[in-house]
Length: 115
Image 1 (cartoon, rainbow, N blue to C red):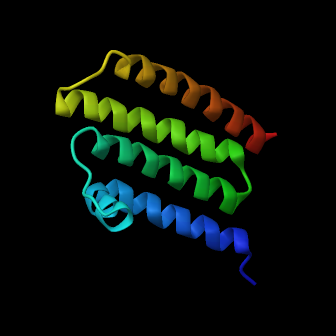
Image 2: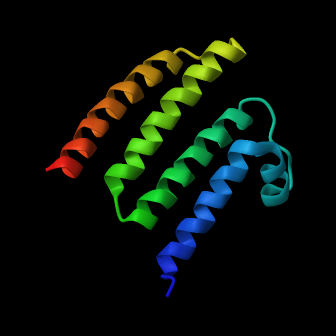
């Protein structure tokens, strides 16, 4: 039997994927207005967070959820900074912080699963 938590997790993962793929469209259908400008990358980061939340709930592993979030946000923010050419003062420190957190979370995850 499917748990209610599994259904909620699936819904969050689906919404997160939609925010990654079509953030402006999701803004239009949810909020009544298409997202533009800084709203698009912000929505994509929110999408990453929803995917990580969904996986964490589905797998009953906060560690796995945070690992997915930190790794994906590191990659997305670095991509955004390099490809879009725009960066606020905290973009690269955020990339570095998430890279360090991702590394620490990965170490913790591998220790948990090899012990």
